[in-house]
Structures are given as C-alpha cells and as structure tokens.
Length: 276
Length: 203
Image 1 (cartoon, each protein chain N blue to C red):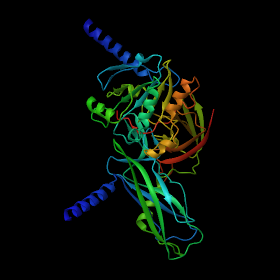
Image 2 (cartoon, each protein chain N blue to C red):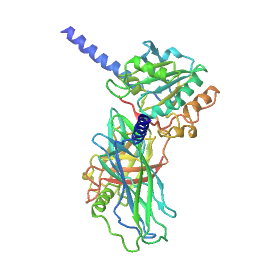
Image 3 (cartoon, chains in turn blue, purple):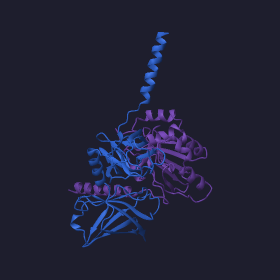
C-alpha cells in the first residue's frame, strides 16, 4: 500500500514536472505605473528577453517565422491598443531574411481603464503571449501573464527604472511626423520610394533600408538601391519572385544608419499610396 | 601553353554553364525548372520523368514545428493520399544542409516517413540546396503545384493561417487542394501565390 502511494506521488510529481514547459525566451508583463486612475490611459509592456543567438519576430516576420501576439483578458470596461512595435533588426541567414528582435525588447501596449473604478481595489490584467523563438531551429512558446495594480484617484507614482526602459523602447519606435514628403511608384518588378525634403542633408543618408509592414510582396533579402540628389532621394525596393500581388499602399519603416533627426532616431514611418 | 589556355577556356565555359543553371529560376505561370535528385530510397528522381502529370513539391524538415503541425494532425498525409490516389506525383524535398536541423541519413528519414504514414511518391535529398534555391523555397512547409504541361501553377503556403496551432487547420483555406481541384477541372487557379509560412529552410 505504502509503495503504491509512493508510486502515485512520484507519478503526480512527474506529470506536474512535464506540464511546466521551460521557455527559451523570458516573458513578463510590466508597467511603470504603480497605480492606475479611472479613465486615464497607461502603458504596459510585454518584456521578451532572449538568450544569446535567439530571436523573436516583428509584425512582419519576413521570409519565415511568426509575429508575437498577445491575447488580452481584461476586467470589464478596460480597453487595450495594438502592440506598438519598435523598429526591427534584419537577419539574413543563407538568403532567408527575417525581421525581429534579439536580447531584450519591450512591446508596449496602451491600456484604457473605464471612467468608473472603485478606489483602493486591485485590478488584474491578464494576457496570454505567444511567440516563436528561433535560433537556427524554432520553438513556438507561450506564457500566461498577469499584472496586479491598485486603483487610486491621485496621479500614480512611477517606477523610475521601468519608466526609463519604456522611454528607451519608445525611442526605438519609428518616427511619425517628419518633414519628408514620400511618394511611391511602381517600376516593373520594384517599387520606387521617393523622399523629398529641404531640411534633410542627403549626406546623412547611409545604409537606408525599407522594412515592409506587410508580408508577401517584397524580396526581403535583396539589396535596395539608393539614389541621392539635392533635396530628394529614391530607394528602389524589389518585389519577391512569388509576390502575392501588387500592394495598394507602401507602408512600413525606413531605416537610416545615421539617424533621421538630431536625436539619432534611426527609423521613420512611411504609409503612402502606390501609384502606377 | 596551349594546355593552360584550354584549361582557362574550359574554366570559363564551366562558369558560363553554372550561370545558365542559376538563371533557371522557378516562376509562376512558366515552365517549372527540371531537376535531378536522389531519393531517401536511393532512386533517382527527375521532374522530367513525370510529364503529363500533376506534381506537388513539398519542402520538408521533420523537426520544424510548422511541419509537425501538419504531420501530427495528419493533415499533410490526408492531402497526399487524396491526390496521389488521383494520380498526382507528390515529391517531398529536404534542403537541410549537412549538420543543420532536419538533415538525417536516408534510413532515418525513411523511418520517419513510415512512422508518419506519409503517402508520397518520393522523399528527395537536396542537401546542397540547389533545387531549393532554384524554386526559391524559403520555409518548411513551402508548397508548389505543377500542371501536366509542366507549368508552375501555384507557389506558397499550404494554407492561409500562419500558425503552429493544429486547431487552425480546420478553419484554414488549403491553397494546395484549391489549386489542384481547380486545375483538374480545367478552371483557372484563383490564388496562384501566397505568403509561405514556417521555419526557414536550413540551407
């Protein structure tokens, strides 16, 4: 009888042990706000920490892979925004190109609490994060996460370290309002992006690359051809041999090694119609 | 001296021939480039042996979670069975380089094919990656359909839901069967290309 019980215990432990899957990527839900106010937006971040050689993916993973996703389970009346993606890195291995993140990355999401909330009560934000962890091999991973925060009427105190990390993450996001006027036109098997600005010093353009938001259209691994003139530049971006069609819009991120402004922000957003 | 010159000439001729081969790239709506590969069964497989037949090319790496999604669920085997029963030639191709994920000796691959009860015409070894690159294969799986006239009529994903979740299969639109069904009835293929999804091919 005793032996049976021991076997039973052993089985129980081993089953539980098997259930607990160890992820390659460390995931955590964090916020810099120590409390929340009714109706006042705040940010949370999915913090993904990858060990050396491993990476996760951007909204467009490129030639292979999957974007990270978050399924939210929020209390009544709470709303969430979409992931605000930092500009990705380009990885090319044996001609296969991917867009993603190495090391530690914060994926920020805006949360809007309802106008009416009881003070001094705790609110629990729950989320299930899914991502594909890849080195050479890939492993689909997921984690159920939660974050408990008290409701207070007064302005929340902030965690200084996390605030700094959030600000650093925001600096990696593509700039939105920049004084460059973009156009995009179709040119045989490529798109020509033209950027015009009198404020831009063309000498500062270096290692320019367009990262498309949408997958399926562009050749992610091929060279893109930059041409610079006095007050404009053109970037030729080639289509994929098996493109799924001609895109209506050209939207994505344009990366500049030297930075686009005096803060050295390296990426800007582009979203324009594609003309014939 | 003349011997050296002949050697030089031969060398350039060789480069030229390599070049011809390299430009021989797959394109939807055009003739599918021919190839010759050894199968895991030791037989030679040439695309040109299957004239007048529908052919499916399936890029494979049994260790990839996206491939597992379609094999553990039997989705891939069911598809293979359905169409090989109709006379379709189904060639599964492995372009994993030596030492990379998915690279196995033929007998191990044969065991996996047996274990999974795959219904394929052949499992082709492309460890040099030449055929994979010729077809622009990027992911496992990455699917191609060739019609009896030898024209590539579909290239892309197996279906329209990129995930590793088996539950998504029944909700997804399978592009390979859509292309085969349409072409077999003499109708135009609606989706000729789609974004393939999966692990990168381990060239």
